[in-house]
Image 1 (cartoon, helix red, strand yellow):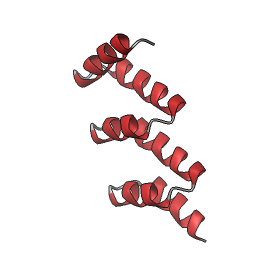
Image 2: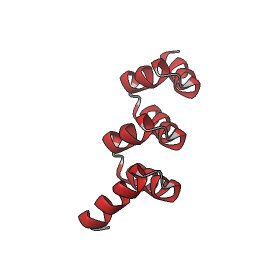
Image 3: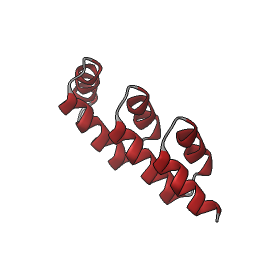
Image 4: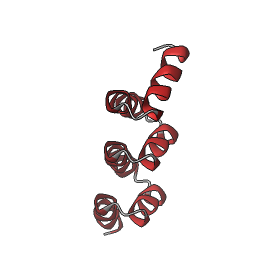
Length: 85
């Protein structure tokens, strides 16, 4: 995907296009792009939160899991509890 296509996709996502949001989540997951996933999660994408939890759990990133748990993710709290046991 070119930079121009990615910019267009982000614009569509910002306008509420679910397909664009889903595509961005998928692309960010493939790249391990936490910043993009955080932006999407903050904009309300539960899929982005799920991917963040998964990636943070795989990396053992307790700081990210704490942040997600504090924001209300019960999945992040569960993974965090498992990592801290």
